[in-house]
Image (cartoon, rainbow, N blue to C red):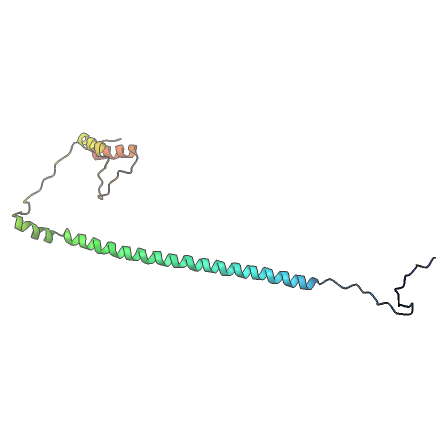
Amino acid sequence: MASPIRLLAPGRTSSTPQPKLEVVPRRRFAWFAVTTTVLISIVMIGAVLLHTRIAERQLEIDRLGDAVRQEQEAFDVQRARRAELRSPARLAELAAPLNMVPGSESTFVAVEPMMLAMTIASTGVLPSDDGVVAARLAPLDQFRLVKEVGAEAP
């Protein structure tokens, strides 16, 4: 075998020992630590943002709940006021200065089914037992109600 040709740097002799070269392991642990730290930071920032949004939504829900409660209280006050205004005692007090007296008897007038049907057709409003207007019914349901009032089978 032939020996390799070595070039010597000027001022260097062959008796000078050359440094021993070693393979340095990669810094995988450092990259793993950095990557893990970044991922954990991102997750924590996301959790903080999510918690902040939840807190904002809860404040909005609380504000709306308070507004609903206030409006319910105002509605109750208005309903009580209406009941006072419609009370028979108050109406009697207001009617007395106008020389009005309570009726002695009352009579009910029977309405023909055809007249009722024509009234419903012209107004689009159906009478009901509970005082609720049934105008949102389908036309066939309205017809069925008219027939029931007239005591006729549909």
